[in-house]
Length: 353
Ligand SMILES: *[C@@H]1O[C@H](CO)[C@@H](O)[C@H](O)[C@H]1NC(C)=O
Ligand SMILES: *[C@@H]1O[C@H](CO)[C@@H](O)[C@H](O)[C@H]1NC(C)=O
Ligand SMILES: *[C@@H]1O[C@H](CO)[C@@H](O)[C@H](O)[C@H]1NC(C)=O
Ligand SMILES: *[C@@H]1O[C@H](CO)[C@@H](O)[C@H](O)[C@H]1NC(C)=O
Image (cartoon, rainbow, N blue to C red; front, side, top):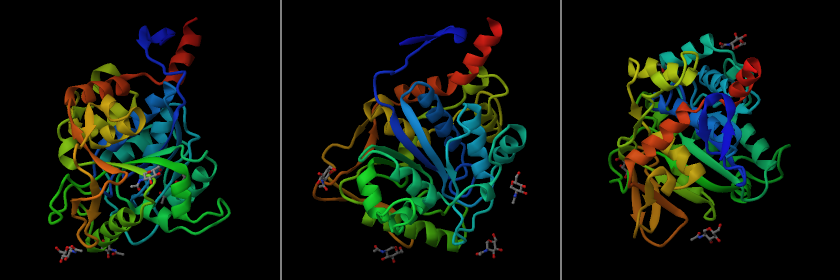
């Protein structure tokens, strides 16, 4: 524990542990499920980075709306991390251009080095460049949107960043992948949620792209990478973000996005992406969850529809989450969302002294 002066609260800081090297892959602002929990996940990851629990390596967007990366940049900049690499999905095989009002509110109302996707490289390039620089078996990826970027990474060829093909690069550098998508055990017939299928707002072409990417990724992931899946109904049990209206000032962009999305101060939203990212960093138990017992097997996604099912069978490095203590998950997440950005505390501290 360390005392952070101006906030007058004790903030636990895990200074002794090695920070988790984290990459977030998000459909923030629109294009996938059109929700606000992506904002929460990025804000929470920055709070964890303030606590030295995370080293935020990169944030990449996996859908098309050009302003999505602007919203990412606003949030990172607010926490003093405007330098963190951002990548965008630029292929034309996804055609989901709708975006949520909070996206433009953030990009026009807050400062950020990046405004739209014309200013950043393709996500797969960011993945390859950043992964190549990391120690082996050290990177954790929180996948909280479509699996388009991860599929592209898996298919990528050796380049100026790494002599390894995508599958080898992923296998060598990534230790854990947490994936929000689908339902567990699932029936394989009806797509659940939208991350595997792109089917909430996408046209037919987009659904084909999203479902094919999900199926390809899940069928070709290196077996040595640990994978934890989080299903749609689990996220419904954890509601967060309402406290932002009272625990943070009005210039906090995370607060603004939640109020924009939910329609008013104090309202909460389900926490799919937040639980997924919390598990990636603090582990399963700290997020009020356990992994399914007696659920050896693997996740299978239909390449046409994006519907998934758990194929019970021999043990793999894949599993899925079960919620045990939704209140613990919600309280942990809200505490992190309420935590003031560390660089701002330092600046305010200097002003007041
Ligand atoms: C994208 O969708 C719009 C309608 O939402 C349609 O007019 C347009 O032709 C589509 N573009 C592609 C490349 O499929
Ligand atoms: C992207 O942002 C840059 C810099 O603000 C701006 O010049 C450009 O017009 C924007 N492009 C789009 C498509 O919005
Ligand atoms: C699980 O991962 C470990 C470590 O990466 C690897 O040694 C093992 O072979 C994997 N197990 C399976 C069943 O693929
Ligand atoms: C995928 O879903 C389609 C439509 O429901 C079905 O026709 C097809 O058989 C499924 N594919 C597999 C491999 O199960």
